[in-house]
Every structure is written in C-alpha cells, then in structure tokens.
Image (cartoon, rainbow, N blue to C red; front, side, top):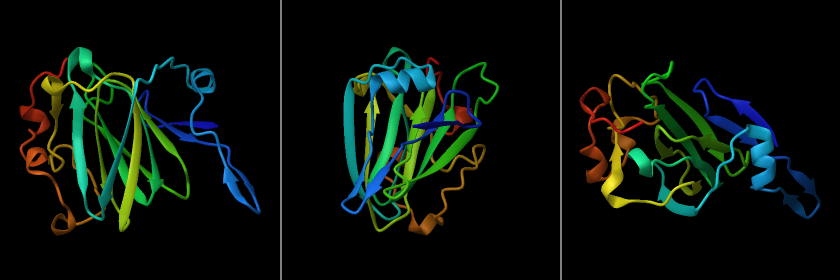
Length: 184
C-alpha cells in the first residue's frame, strides 16, 4: 500500500497494491499490522458499517463527541463519492479546515480520518455503496455534527444545491461558529 498525507495532519489517503490478471483483480483491503507499520497509527477497528445511496445523497457532516469519538477508514465498493473530513481538534493548525478525496470503485482508495474530525460524503455516481471501519462503537447520545453548507467551511460538494438530498436531521446541524464544544 502507498500512504499519501493530506493537508490535514493525520488524515491519509491509502492506495492499495492491486494485482490484475485475466480473471480480474485482487487486493488486500485491510491488514492491521501493515496499516500500523505504514501509518504509525495503532488503531483497533471494532465496528464496520455500510450504506447504499443514490446520486446527490449527502450524509454528514457527522461525528461522535468526546470519549466516543471515532477514527474511520472509509472506502467505496460501488460508485463514486466525494468524501470530506473537517478538522475540529482545538489547537490544531488546520482547525476548521476541510479536505476531500474522490473515492471510487475503480481507484479502490481508502481515506483514513483520525478522531477529532467531522466526516461526510456526497454520492456523485448514480448509486454508491460506502463502507467504513470505526475504532469506537456508535453511541446515540454522543452524536454531533456540522451543517454541510456552512459558509465558513465553504465545502465544494461538486453538485448544485438543488441536486443534493440531505436528511432533515442533518439540515438541523449547527454551523461551526455556533457549534458546541465537541470535546476534541
């Protein structure tokens, strides 16, 4: 695997080594020891999640607060998404900044997002299957997030507002300037 640092410290793009032949392809999508050796992060993933969405669905920007925060390793097994992380670590040089990665079934890339970030994605293809590993269990009482259209974040979601489908719950999320302390 090849590890590529992003502008946000700790967020990494991971490109797998893919073995192609006349039958198709093979790659190792995760190996705990290789991940730790390559990244320097000894993350113990405890929960895997998967979602299916259609074009224009935007999920996020989500997080788990305080002791329930989660590091995530995300990938797309069908379709294409723009995946976004927002740095919410107080004292970080990139606090309040975001970084996005295009994840597709063709590139098989993964995006590692450490604890202390909000996370979201938008589906750019007709449909997408999105999978992610978490290093902490989901806790409903610790849900939090930011509004996807926060003007201070100014995220380019690559689709116009009329083409975006967001849950009512996500539409109620605060802007960063009005957000509570998330405990990072």
